[in-house]
Length: 147
Image 1 (cartoon, rainbow, N blue to C red):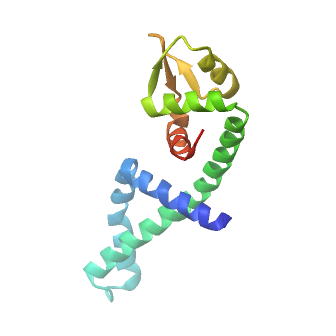
Image 2: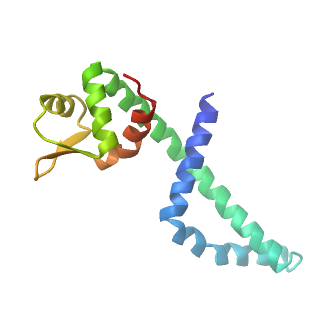
């Protein structure tokens, strides 16, 4: 089960990777293409070598993200443990905040959540917001959480 979860997380991180760091991956295609053509001594056609270059780069990124998935899963387990310490009223208010993206200041429950989790903060205008590091995690948590 753990390996399946890790591979799923790695695939998710790989998709995220190609949304942001794709320039490096795409930029390395000509180098990999040249290496494949050089090693094969021209026995492989251009189109096939180009296909192999893309497949090789996707595999390298996937393996890299498999290692990153392990760290991400550990972080999620740690963050879930922190959220489990909140009482149901705090969890419900945190869910409202996550779904709305920001909440007007003035509720003591958010002060308690901030002290307990460090996942939210009050901006200079006075709105409660979610720390960027925790946004994706809390969005998935809020979808799963039923008070």
